[in-house]
Amino acid sequence: MARKSMDFFTEHFSIFNASGAYSVGTLVLVTTVFILAGAVKGVVGLGLPTISMALLALLMSPAQAAALLVIPSLLTNIWQMRPFDAVPPLLRSIGTMQIGIFVGTMMGAWLLGAPAGDAAGVALGVALVAYACWGLTGRSIVVSPAARTWMGPLVGFATGFITAATGVFVVPAVPYLQALQLSRDRLIQAMGVSFSVSTIALALGLWLNHSYAPGAAGVSLLMLIPALMGMSLGQSLRQRLPVAHFKKVFFCSLIVLGLYQVAAAV
Image (cartoon, rainbow, N blue to C red; front, side, top):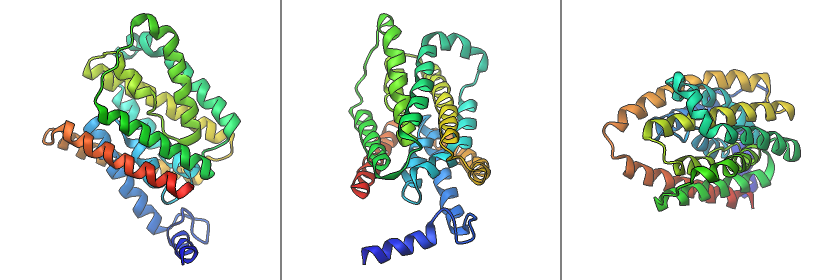
């Protein structure tokens, strides 16, 4: 019975239909995912790749999901980096971290290949649960200026390696950036910088592993529209919803999705 159910799911909701093109049903589901993920990013400043990977991985392989999020993630994060004239001073604080992210992602792509299989599913689930549990604690960690010299590249490398394995690049980058005690605007901007570097490195890693097909690039570009629609909706909701309450729902949802990913892979 379980095998028949899986065959039915694969037949009707696989990323490719029998002719090798994207099915209408899949496009509808993927569009819905990007609207939701964009809305979350619009409210809390992050979450587009995390939500996208968590939900898309229920429909397709992690490598396919990562390929679809590249363009929406990159362009929305570049938009988040504004004002651009404030980026150079910011890079003096987080520049070495970005180098670590790029190196870690490339090394992870070389050693692990593209995100795929049960191991990537387990890694993705663990990353989601770990990040959500940290978020729910609400604890504040402070990194001293002296510690940033060695901690920035180390955190960046770890983030990059996790990115190569799972397609998710928030752990441990976001906790570290929050520990720098940046202002709210600079924190949002710093996340935009970090996520942009991670997205570029992930796309390059997928390309090196022959996992970034032209068809995926086309649909990824198409998904920019629902992602931006979701961001606009999220920014509107940000003015009406208590962000703290929304974050709790967001993190609890990530725990459920992460545990599902681990259970499904195991």
